[in-house]
Image 1 (tube, rainbow, N blue to C red):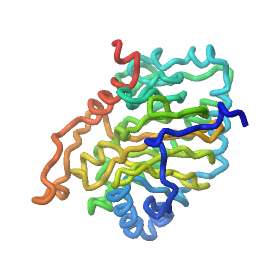
Image 2 (cartoon, rainbow, N blue to C red):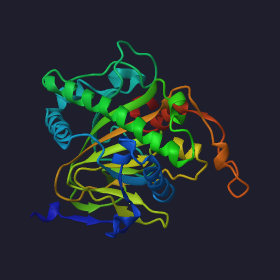
Image 3 (cartoon, one colour):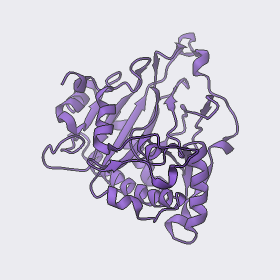
Image 4 (spheres, rainbow, N blue to C red):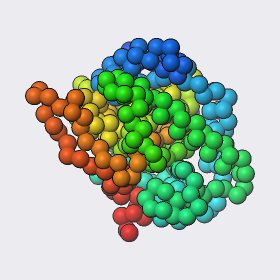
Length: 331
């Protein structure tokens, strides 16, 4: 291997290789089939109050289908740059649908430029309705792309609502608690490609800078390359090693607000120094644009006083995007 392709990590980018008992694997089959929802809810509570992350298995999504979406994602990112730029996210205005080039979105712009390229879709609309709601853009040269990625989006919507039932039960709420906040929820299906990095790698340019997710819940499909790093409560970065047949689940800012910091929206980032192309497929589900998120009464105590004022989901999420996207900053 050429010396230039060997990564030399800055010490701040090193992650511990340690047991992932701290990020548990939760079998959610008893939640899906209803045979033991409370047992799954108990495991969810431990995971989200201690790590903010968990792997889930027996989630009901066939691996062959996930693999087919990875395949069409790779083929999209292999297209010539001019073809991808024809679908640039700026052409969708505030709907935020389409292609984002390397360094086009930066999640920690004060410190890091993100070496990744993305493609985003969401609930299909015939016209622009406002932030996060509009028409998807599709590559004309990959006719199967729209069918596969949108089908994946729809399956993730269903799975995420099931997981949120488990989260509601874990908080001693009715399992339908989130339904009233999610009649027309914001959702984003993202495809990601991370080129490998070689030479000296510092915090100024990595796959994606340290951040918390903005909304309710994220469902991440990883390939086998690795690169995800999660910060634990001690402030150490821990590798989120891929586990075949699982999704990585983490909560976002809105669930942390809802639980008044009882549940943790954890910092995470991607550092790809494997020498291989990395692909991932994250799905983000939030609440309705005008849904009001504020701490649950059961999560406010003398020992844990109220930490957050009410915020609407859409305003919070769009505000986070506005500092990450160049075309929104210029608007």
